[in-house]
Image 1 (tube, helix red, strand yellow):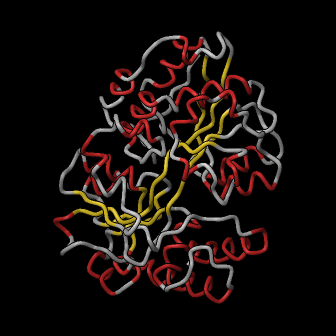
Image 2 (cartoon, rainbow, N blue to C red; image 1 turned 60 degrees about the vertical axis):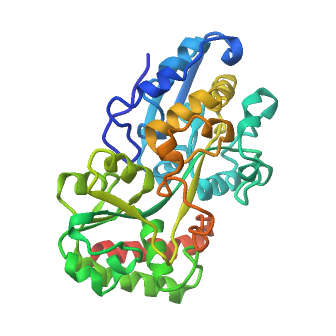
Length: 359
């Protein structure tokens, strides 16, 4: 039995757009690494095409259970003690580094993933997983500013819209993500520091900045900030680019911007956790979603950038040319990926976040 994800969260699908995934499905033995079996997936909500699961089952005979989590920390907490039965997980870069160190991931047998040849080689030797021994890149993106253009003068290209004097004009209509590393990281970048700072003084300064900024915000959104400007309930939100692009397609008065100080870029990957009961099914899934037509169907649905070069030929032309989805390297010059900072530094961030939320 397939458990499908709920539709209103961080990485959701647009109504009707999932048909693209169906149109891109080609039945045949190319995906049939095994016939029958089970697969248990643990992923961000609706971070797949509308018909991807059904098409996978039709191609392989493998039935899928699909469970969801809100963030990487929830994922790690679920698997920290033992794997409750998942075969595929989709952690972000820094969490992969943390899970490798904790011996929570299985090495991936790349011989069983011929579609690996479709992936941009620049994504296959990341710092968080040298040689991509434990992870296969899935999608990538940024976190920036989503906003309602009628309420904003010009293009808000700085974190000062959240932390500077400009924020006063938006008092009561600013929403931040309820994501510790992202929001503290944004404050660090605004102050001119690395979002991976290990300096207690810099982290404390970022903490103070966020506390001062709270006077202008309405809330910390758990994973649905993109819905607020769409509904007219906020004018400025810190959000994942794909989520904002999705609502931009529903309301042309909404827009997205990358702050000039830089921020967080992420790569989410497909991994097989230690204790996976169906590792062969997991490999079949990784190969399936890296077929160009299947992968393009997913990317066209969720509006995130794919590292699959072959799939990019099938991406909606407007999306492929959209700098909100595929920003230039020049635009990303000051952007960083999170890295695992170790338990001692992590406590500094935990303590700072506790102070911010309690202030």
